[in-house]
Image (cartoon, rainbow, N blue to C red; front, side, top):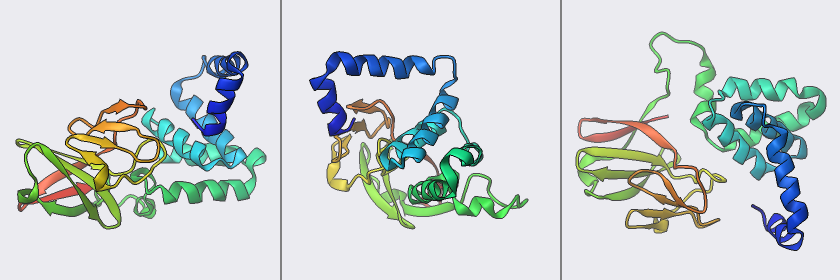
Length: 215
């Protein structure tokens, strides 16, 4: 919640409670994916970048595909206009979401990996049991955690507003985003404070003693 909304909630609690109740009830007959796609459109219309990032991630979590997001934007062309749609796509591409990777637009190639490309990240021997390490690979930040034979790899960006979380934010197995203090259990990826959205976990494999990640 922004500082302005926090102020209004404290200054006019009854009025703001009624407003949030209205928003919640207005979409009660829509499935979560559709509600969030509509919210994406409203944020694009207002050109609210943080709101677009937030509701886009929610729509994807509820099962929306990149094609459905693009279709929603184009269907709203009469209200949005081309300039806002281009602005929205620029914001989305800056988020570096695997669903919107440009290499997925090359067409259906029979020998292509449908879920992205494998990237070499770190030596398996460099991982310490029960702890995590932050790594950078091909311009992307990652947290790699190991517990016994199990390895997990997470996107370093906070699922709240895509803040890139630094290594210093990791204390033991607790990772805290410095922007809004969302906290995560690095062993499970679960959000344990402030928010309710887990870290984004990425597919990985061990090849030749190296941890490789796909996106």
